[in-house]
Length: 87
Picture 1 (cartoon, helix red, strand yellow):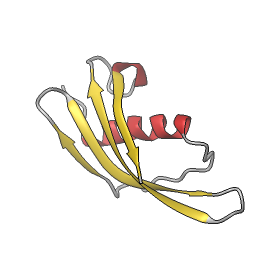
Picture 2 (cartoon, helix red, strand yellow):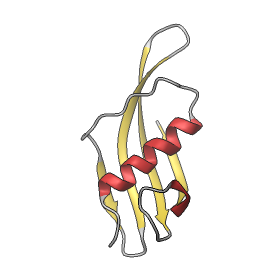
Picture 3 (cartoon, helix red, strand yellow):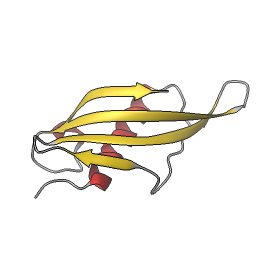
């Protein structure tokens, strides 16, 4: 069974939280879009809110491309982050 868009979104959030300097990044529960390609590639579009060093709230939009390699869809090791664009 292939992962759902929600599975890919959860993995994307994990990748972003470990890569951005914003320790307080907050992601919306349902405000995301995803595309699943036939080759197990998922594209996730969403945003996260965080606070800058001076306390200003910052909204960051992102597009993430992930490749699923099989196995448990909740295990980050079964995914590769191909590209992450933040804007």
